[in-house]
Amino acid sequence: MEAMIKKFQQRFRKVREEMNRWDELQSLFVLQFRNASSIIERLQALQDSKNYGNLNGVSGIKDAVLMKQMESLQNIFLSMAKTLEEFHGITLSLGKIHRDGRQMVKGGTNRLTEKQLQLRIGIKPTLAYCLDGLMTLHEMYQSEYNLKVSLFSALSAVTLKPNLGDLNAIQQFLVDQPNIPMEEVQFMFDIIFAEDTT
Image 1 (cartoon, helix red, strand yellow):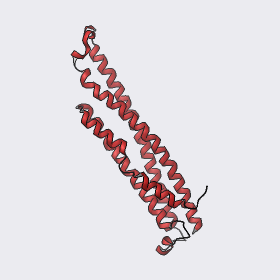
Image 2 (tube, helix red, strand yellow):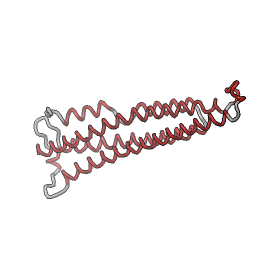
Image 3 (cartoon, helix red, strand yellow):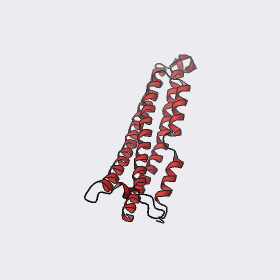
């Protein structure tokens, strides 16, 4: 049983690596979002000739500036889509870690009973707790990924009819990561590694 717990701890170490990568991507995605928002906010002003003042005398200036801003926005959207693919890769990895853990306790010739899954050795967590923890983490990050995809779609839609209030609301959702209560995640890791000093 203790050997199985150690295998779960290895899986949780991999989860922690994926979570650290997620945090890096989150910072990048928020930065990309803010850059896109800045351009979207400017688009309306850039479409009004009055805002060009003396530059109106330069032939095609308004169209050139608008085209350049739209190109920049398109590049940011492409970067955001790539970042979303990396988020998705993390959710797939977390799903695989959970499936592997489930297979470890429920598959093969050494299939564990429900009683064995609930058995506690000292202060170490039960195997059921480990398995539930992996499932919970996967579900949290999957939900957060789905939210990010929705927010990205909303940002694309707002581009057509810019609204500062909508942009701010979308950004707040993105920054908050509402589906990942970090104190709950930390508590889970504290239990998993209760005696682990490595």
